[in-house]
Length: 318
Image (cartoon, rainbow, N blue to C red; front, side, top):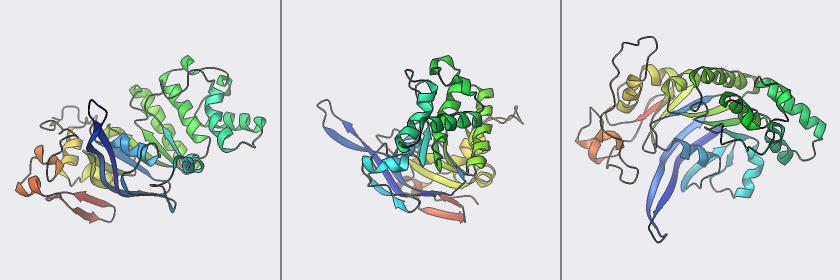
């Protein structure tokens, strides 16, 4: 459905006088594919570029170089006006349900806004019926249509945000930390809802999260990101049970295991380097337990381990 090839997204630091000075590569040389009806989880530490990638795929940030292809159409050089027809096919669910909904709009206005933009000829009665149907899909009553966002809990607001994305019948939804602002029990409800909607609407997801357990639960494939680069990509089973890259191993070893609460969880040593001053060679070598001299000087090439499993490491483990 969507393919990303050698994608770069850059920012520029500015001086006190407003001059653009240093280029900051927030996303570097990323390549992966999301198939139809597939969920790809994107995981990594804060500041690694996950949300930047999501915004670039939505056309909200300019792409410096590389290719972004959606169902055969190149998106990397599209003007803002050319994105409009694609908005109904690629939707987003943001992290914060408290700031992503306009407090001055009713629930009906929030959910129906996209329909009125993309289907201006649709009659009001048909729009109302469609909104009611979508609310039922996210387990909300149509009695809430005249109410405002401040009257609802975080979990209910996120369901409203899901309904807003869903009403346009999209093909791909980018979930940017969509459950991280919710409590644990509400997270579980929303996660189960997203999985159910995926089957009902034949959806694909890019699910961005820093929570490994959530990513393991919802994803078919997982991409592991570090300092703007994907260091490993594979199926859920490959990444969670047979990781190849030392960073992936460290991430999953340090995650909390409910089935073994007494398990000692090793932590990643050292601090993640600044995006303003990335290391030479492999970016992870400053924290890697198996780093050697080549890791400090040479950027690792892509190594294909299996058909759907690849990594960027000089010393991968199969």
